[in-house]
Image (cartoon, rainbow, N blue to C red; front, side, top):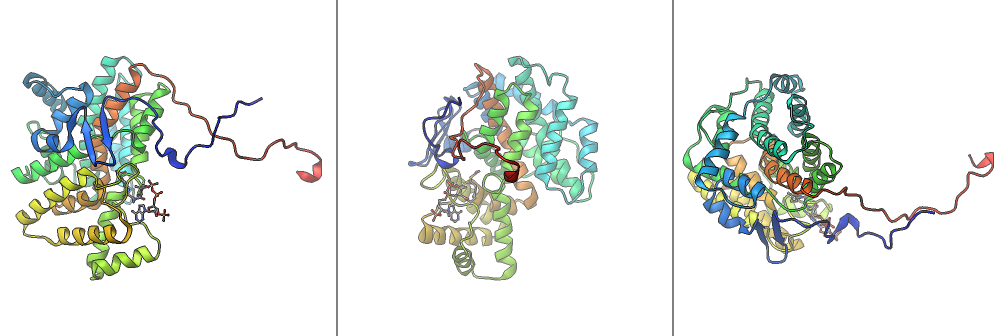
Length: 379
Ligand code: ACO
């Protein structure tokens, strides 16, 4: 006889606490996000992406020596194997950059001699390699899809500057560097979101790190999760090219019961604190670039959604305009999210494997009961 779970689960596991974690805390009512005790605003203003990577993996910000050590390891590990370069070259130019990234990350595992070594030391080394190489993969995909040759990683630059450099061969100025570094920090971790949960479920079977990260990338691609930033860009482009008034456009979409991407969140019942910070950066960048059109469109959209649906922007909303002003193509928005979030994903995998137990919930069976195959006429 089968053992039945006691009740029916809430749809989408809303409100379910699935595990204990020391990595990140979110207060959805207060709109507060904290990485290992540090508020996101403090980290975005006063640290670097490399510091945050160290914090997520170790629970502590790095000392000066630890910072230099990690930065050196990340810089030295950026080059991707030729087989992965070939794979990116072979992908059709019409393929989604997220799909190519997912495949390339899986293929990175074929070239990693430690792929099947599940020791904590080997897993940390793999986390460094993945974090260092994902930006190189994303920039290579962008260059290939634009019909250009990839640019080799810069041996001196930090993660943020090196990525922007690999896109167009220009070392970014201080403002673009600072803003992009803060974007990486804001996207690095977010508790047990869909992609992180997917990665932890895979990791808990003792599958390898590359498999778990490929699965997390697959989950992030969806438009209800990280893929929303691309949809926001498409919506803003649509409004610009149609010449429509923002409010008329949004009201028409709401009347058709369409979702407005970049709004709403399962956990935040108020504005996502990352959106607040991104809005500030968008205003700053708009003034520097002398183009306030993205900001004005975004703020109008935000006010209409608040008034009509009491919906607030999430991380994907203002990041789309920030990236657009930085000159980054829309197809790269979600891959950039992934190359930042790999820090949080790998932190969760390390935590999962430290005292692992298979993650295996139950489904409440609600199908028909007590059936029999019966006579041939029923078959
Ligand atoms: N536009 C219009 N209506 C919305 C939106 C939206 N963006 N988000 C939620 N709603 C409405 C729903 O239609 C629903 O209304 P109803 O009760 O009248 O049917 C109500 O709000 C509740 O929506 P749910 O889908 O039940 O909320 P859930 O917690 O499951 O969804 C989600 C959260 C998926 C983020 C949702 O808000 C959404 O689809 N947003 C747009 C996509 C998006 O921006 N995703 C990125 C999230 S952040 C991240 O993952 C990095």
